[in-house]
Structures are given as C-alpha cells and as structure tokens.
Length: 461
Ligand code: TRP
Image (cartoon, rainbow, N blue to C red; front, top):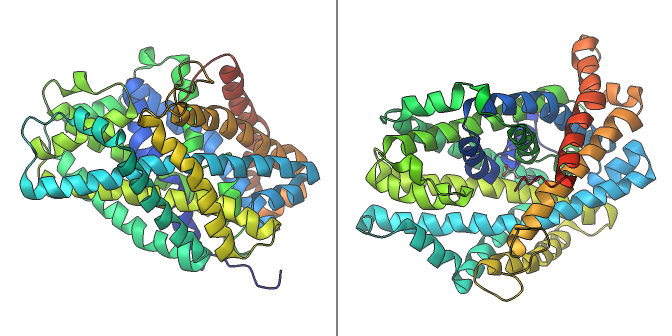
C-alpha cells in the first residue's frame, strides 16, 4: 500500500476504542435481562468465569492475529494460519454485515426514547399512558423506524469515514468518559433507592440450585457477544496496534471494563425494579421490555432525579450503541480497504449503504410488512429481525470463534504467537503458558459445547 497504515495513537486509544466496541446493547439490553431470567447470583458467577477462561484468551488471540499481520480479518487470518483461513475471515465480515444491519434498528430506538424522555422531563410523564402501547406504536410506525435507523446509520458512517485515529479513536475518547460519567450518576441514584439491597443480593449471592445447564451455555454465548468476539472485529482493531503496545494489558483492560459496565448496568436496573412494589412480577418477557417498556415510566415515577437521569440514560444507550456500530462497520469497510484496495471514503460509504438496505428489512419486520414480518426459517423465530439475530448469535459467532481459537492455538506456530504476546522480559509461564493452555483446550471445548447444543436445538437469542 502506498499510504502508511493508520494506527491508534496510543495504547489508551486502542483500549478505549475496543472497549467501546465491546460495551453496547449487549451490556445494557441483553445482560441484565438474561441475568434476570437465570435468577442472578450463580449465573453471574458462571458468566465471570466464562469471561476469564474463554473470553479473555480469545480476545488476546484476536488482537495478536491482527497486530501480527497489520491486516484486517480476512488478510490477517490468511497470514496467520494459511490461505484457506481467509474463509473464516470472510465469514466474520459477513457476520459483521448482518449484525450491523439489525443492531442499528435497536440503536435507533434509543434516539426515539431520548427525544420522548426530553419531552416528558419538561411536560411531565403522560398520566395513564401504558408504556407497552408507546413501544408498540413506535416500533410499528414504518416511516419513523426508517428515519431512526437512517439517522443512526449516517452517524456510524460519518465516524468510520474519518478513519481509525481521527474517527473511531476520537469518538471513543470523547464518548466513553461521558458514558462512564452517566453510568456513575445513575448508579449513585439507584443505590440510594430502597430496592438496591435486594438488587445486590440478587446479582451477587450465588445459589447454584437455581442455575440450569442452559444458563451456563447462555453465559458462555453471551461472553462472546459482549466482547465483540468471533467475527474478527478485534482482529481488525488489533491490526491498528503498533508494535510497542502490550496485547496482554490491553486485553485485560478491555475485558475488565466491559464486565464492570455490564454489572453496573444490571445493579442500576434491578435497584429500580426492586424499589417499586409489584414491578418485579411485571418485568416483561423480553430484553426489549426491560429497557424500553419498564424503565421509561419508572424514571418518572420512582427514580430520584429521574427527570434528568431519564434522558441521560437513553443518551447512554445511544453512545454505547454507536461505539459498537462503528466497529461493526469498520470490520466490513476494512475488508474492502485492505483486500480490495478501495479507498477508505468510498469503501465506508459503499458498505454503509449496502448494509442499510438490509437495515430497512430489519426495521420493517415489526411493521406488519408481508414476508419481513412473517418469515420463519428457525422454529419460533418469526420475522426477518429475529431470524437474522438468531442466525448471527447462534451460528455465526460461535462457529467463527471456534475457528479463531483453532487458528491461534493449533495452526499458528508457538513462536509466532509467543512473539506477539511476550515483550521479551515477562515471566513466560504466566503470560504465555496459561494463555496457550486456554486457547488450545479450554476455549475450543467450551465454544464447541455451544455449537453442539445449538445443533441439538438450544436457542441463545
Ligand atoms: N459487543 C457488542 C455489544 O455488547 C455487540 C457486538 C458483538 C459487536 N459483536 C460485535 C460490536 C462486533 C462490534 C463488533 O453490544
């Protein structure tokens, strides 16, 4: 290539951008909900184990594969493990394409709720309005849905257009501190509520009698999704790391921050729910319900300073989603840039536009549109949105992740991976030996178990 490759300006730049990718709707929307469904405590503990035993080693594997080749997913896997492995990279790019196409729709909802909640803060929450009706109304309004997703897509494209250090890193540097600040405010307010003790007990007191095998697999599957693993997103971000930065430290920081934020979000939401009499029986049967149906009203009826915190909460959701959508678009665009030699500006706009075509399908699957609303390929997954979500979370991410563990653990030479992980002086057994054991044995067996259970009919989405 004639231009030098754009890199993160510093180690903090990488950590912030990758943490931004990891923290997203998975943390705010999915994790609290599955924790609720699986009765907290034991599930949370198992999740933490999965994060450390499976998520962390794969995070290190993806970053090192990327840094070694300084190429995005397809090129990096080819160089790391052999020409055929380009297919695994391509599978990841496809996963990024599809995931972004429907993730944007939910991200768009946060814009709607932000606008609504600003209105409520000034005008008061409409008495007697059923939050569920509001949700159904917005989601069924085709014009509105298209506008919201288009808005979010344009924001995503605009960031990626400016490249790695001037676009993605800059946005992460500005937005992540804001996101942490908002969460802290929410946490302080939530901990002051009467339900916070019960919430903390629910989340942190493990009772293994309440955990089923399916919960273990769900924890494992989610640890993948929440860390943005299995599709080469972290390979791509790793390809912008310069030689001087430590992969081990960066991975530890990214994984720790993502986990912390998921836990904090859960403490906040559960404190609110447990503070309102009867609320815990009403939390509706879907993650969408918690974030967009139960919470909006509670901000105005139960949460101290809710008139300020309500809108801020939806800003938080939007910022968290945006730092994830930019990394998804980067996976797809960087393929065009590195492998097809398309200039960045053109690649970003072309990929963004192509993905938006499918966003339209996802957005319209809630509006009763024929085919999009009724399609059923996987039993019980009705409509375009649920179908593609099921396909990506159940099939694409686990198979992609499995292949990546094999590439790093079995197909790359010991020398090659050792050189990336060690900076010369470290105690070897700790930094390298432990990683190698986990990436060769623990991670593939665990991810293999997810794949087998999906084949046997288990559902993660
Ligand atoms: N980690 C994101 C979240 O928790 C979702 C996600 C999965 C993702 N894979 C990704 C984001 C790849 C960016 C790139 O919401």
